[in-house]
Image 1: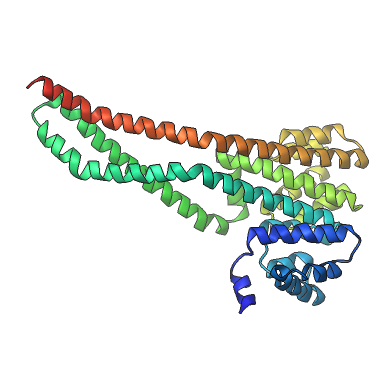
Image 2 (image 1 turned 90 degrees about the vertical axis):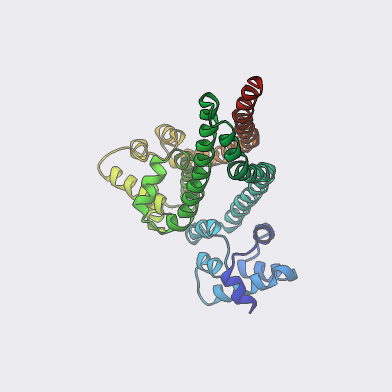
Length: 341
């Protein structure tokens, strides 16, 4: 029964973070993976997960498939795919822990920042509904003979209708995105990533981080640059990364340099092109890839913090402007009417 629940629902993020933190620490001490899982099972809360992973691994499952069957996050499962090649599991588990921790922390921050604006938005939505259904019809009837005042109220009515329509449209688009986006082809998804502004910004950092991280780990494992790109091309779980890796290989076979080949991939950051333009040997390339990976992670964290800090003030400013517009649209005709009495 417990296993079926795990199969249906992804493991809690906090449990995954604890699991990766402890397992990476044990493996760094030199223990084999199965022994590490046995030690992890000493904790009652992690025992079932450790036992299930042990069962799948002893049956011959690859490490990423074993973690997938125990319902770990797809984010870390895709990372673990490359653990088949370089076998540096302690470092890979640490990166999985860091990614999960970062995603959890920013979700908490975003939820905290949006809590009051969303509550205020719902209150405004309810107030607009009351204004449209009760207040506006009475005011329009009152000022029916005063065309100079009436146009403000009619404009307010259109504004509220437009706001309701915009809210419905945005909610529908968000729902459609959640339901349809995972099902579309890689090429269509890549087109959206490259042409939708917000998607392009996010994917440029995320994809560049994935590319530098996995290329560094594969080169460190002793693979050549070409072999590393072929491994990334074969991983269809990262559709965009697979397409770009194939594209780079084709460009290299046509005689272009690595920096020129990367330049043909719009979602890769300029820093990545500059890195390959400067690095000529594999040893220095590995070091610079590691530094670029850390830089991209730090930069993404800084960007997300800035966006989160701006969300609440911008939301409150928009709400304030809307409320002032509503107030002015109702009160100005009322003042004009009172002055004529």
